[in-house]
Amino acid sequence: MDDAGPADKQIFTARLAPHRSLSQANFRILMMIFAGACAFTALPFLLLGAWPIAGFMGLDVALFYFAFRASYRAARAYEDVTVTPLELHVAKVSAKGQRADWRFNPSWVRLEREEHEEYGTQSLAVASRGRRLEIAAFLGPEAKADFADSLTRALAEARRGPQFS
Image (cartoon, rainbow, N blue to C red; front, side, top):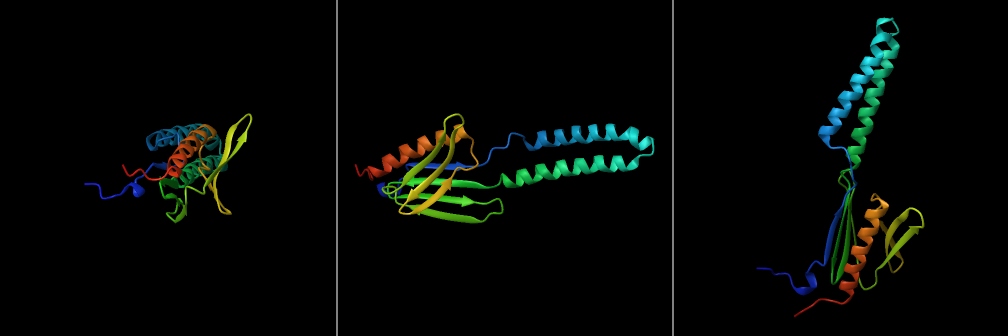
C-alpha cells in the first residue's frame, strides 16, 4: 500500500550522469592495441640501441592509461533531480562521493537557460529568491535541452499543486 499522500507524489525524477562512450571492455581492447602499436614502433629503436625512445613510448602508454582512468573516475559523479508538488530537490554527488543537497519551492523556481544560436543550450540553472544553482553542466546541448523541457513541464505541474482526487 502506498502511504505517500498527494503532496509527496513524485512528479519528476531524473539521475544525470556524465556520458562515457567507451565501455570497460572496449577500454581494455584500446589499451592493448595502443600498447602493441607503441611496442611495435619502439622495437626497431630498441634493437638499434636507442633504448631511451622505448622508455618514452612506455611513458606514452602509462599517460594514456592514467588519463582514461581519471576520466572514468570523474564519471562517477551524478546529479539527482526530483520534483514533488511541494519541493524541487537537487542532489549533487561528486566523483569522491561527497553529497550536496538543495531544496527549492517549485512555485518560486525559475529555470534559466543560456542558449547559443548555433550550438544550442549551453547552460541551465535553477534560480529562486536570490539563489542560483547550475545543473546538468556535464550534459551535451541536446540532452540539456531535452532535460530542460522535461523539468519545465514538471515544474508547471508542481505549480498546479497536489491533486487530492
